[in-house]
Image (cartoon, rainbow, N blue to C red; front, side, top):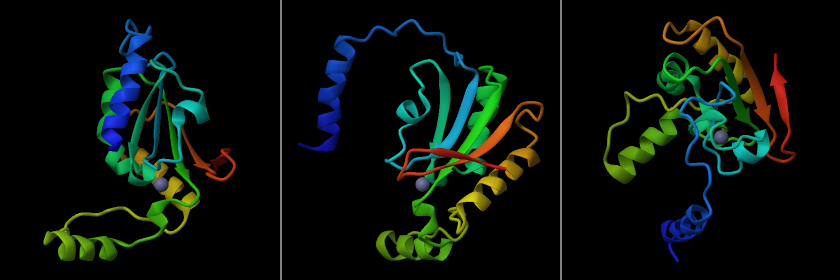
Length: 163
Ligand code: ZN
């Protein structure tokens, strides 16, 4: 069975017993998490987040520059007051360069991505620090709230704070 058909089947079961249809739109825990799209990270399980608890903004690498638009909306329209940035060990972003993916796009898709920064990195802790700095440089997000950075270990499930 194709993956989308499988999730549709699972969703029918989920909806059959769904009881959280009356949650307010603003996240109850006033928290926004920025993290990688990596399939091994389950914010719900790893962070104990249930429906209605937090905004989880995901992209390749959990990069801040790509999350700022969502964070502005999260904070100014939906009231979040803390930000956690979580990168992780063994991230796919450690495995390529902008040149690598630009060449693949050229060869496989005949597309030109020379103007796109794909934001790979070579050091996970350094990328967390870089992303906190990117947050601090932004004029579209609140600077008066806690912004903390972490590395999630995909082998142990443990978060370590990056200071
Ligand atoms: Zn990743």
